[in-house]
Image 1: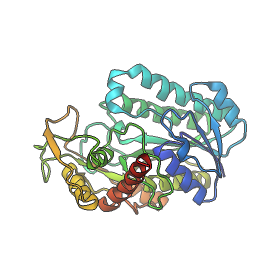
Image 2: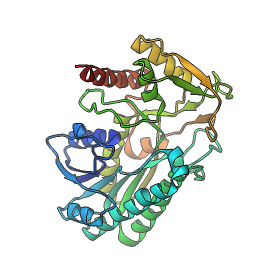
Image 3: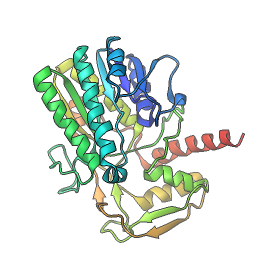
Image 4: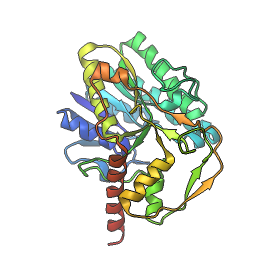
Amino acid sequence: MKVLVIGGAGYIGSHVVKEMMKAGHKVTVFDNLSSGLRQNLFPENDFIYGNILIPDDLDAAFAQGFDAFVHLAAFKAAGESMIKPEKYSVNNITGTLNIMNAAVKHNCLKMIFSSSAATFGEPEYLPMDENHPQKPINYYGFTKLKIEEFMDWYDQLKGMKFAALRYFNAAGYDPEGVVCGLEQKPENLLPRVMEAALGQRTLKIFGTDYETRDGTCIRDYVHVTDLARAHVMALEYIAKNNESLKLNLGTANGTTVKEIIEAARRITGKPIPADEAPRRPGDPASLFTTSKKAKELLGWEPKYSDVDTLVDTTWKVYLKAESLKNK
């Protein structure tokens, strides 16, 4: 299939592009490079420099004729979304509607959407499944939930079949070492641990008195390559069955903050000092999912999401970036 990957120069997007190519699809990347990197582009792909807030850019892109598109161009900093909701309204909601309208105009009616566990909010039970109530506690999660609702309507009214893939905690890097552009201004735990290992920051553990096995938060870390594979499998499911999907993607195995740090100390050989800090507001003690539905419908299971692979693949990319910087 001819696939337009919007946000394909970003961290997750570049891994999705790689897996799409591996599956034999012809990929074009659309990106404004605000957070994506030219380093993440593959020479085999066409590249369109464009902005989802400019309808003419999208119209010109979709006019080239595509069988499907992947949307990974949303802003995703939950904390920032609570301070700048207008920024997230314009980019995530208006931008997505621009994309969907251009796709409908050019009869591109298969959509893979990067949704989020943030649509669920506080866990009412664990592991969280697809039927868990969706009550987002930050504006970012709200925008993702609204987009899921828009897709429901476009499916009903325009026949646009979609997969809403609700990631839990994306982490790791391409095990083959091909995709190695560092995520820009990352806010997630593992990149912060890597920066601390390289002496670039002081690491803080926010809350050590949770009711968990070691007092720190438990999260469901899923390898970015496993997520990328799910995009390919979801697209092929939609094409074959002509029905939409909403799936949670995780490992069903939560890992604590301290467990990630200990694995990083062992794999990097660095001491990685970490200061204890108070809990952050809105951080649940535990957050993990079951991907039983993704396994049943897609045959998807995480292959690279064990803690050692997550840490090792990330460390190799950070070491490579550091060595290039010091040349």
